[in-house]
Image (cartoon, rainbow, N blue to C red; front, side):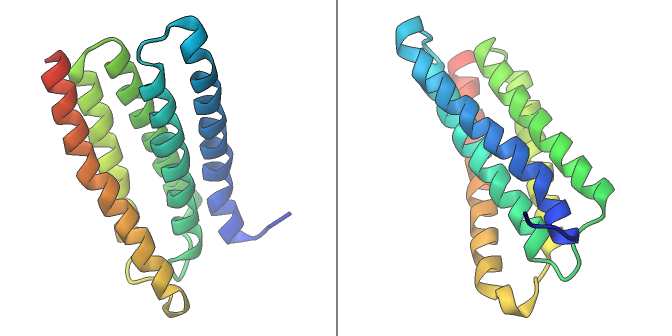
Length: 155
């Protein structure tokens, strides 16, 4: 089992991100039989944003900067990311775009702080830093698009 300060940074993101991917699979499995209309969207969001993006966020914070962030920073990033994800899902399900927007704002804050925390990164991982930055920017650009769609559908 991995250990050390870098693993300590990644571990909570790995645990929660993996749980979100598994939850997305469960939602996908029950969507058809239960007639859950928003199920495919919820499943995709749980897997891609709450899960995979969170795994990438944790890995990036753990591996890319010269020194991993302090435990309190990691905990704050983790809590705000997951609160944001929960707000986006809840706001979408209850059709209240203000809640969805607050969740999206939380995700933007975490991504901006993560980009800042990684900084230029360690020279030996420069290719991974570029990939991390690209993924962060992809999600950052996706947030306003998703929020616009939420407001058009439910605003």
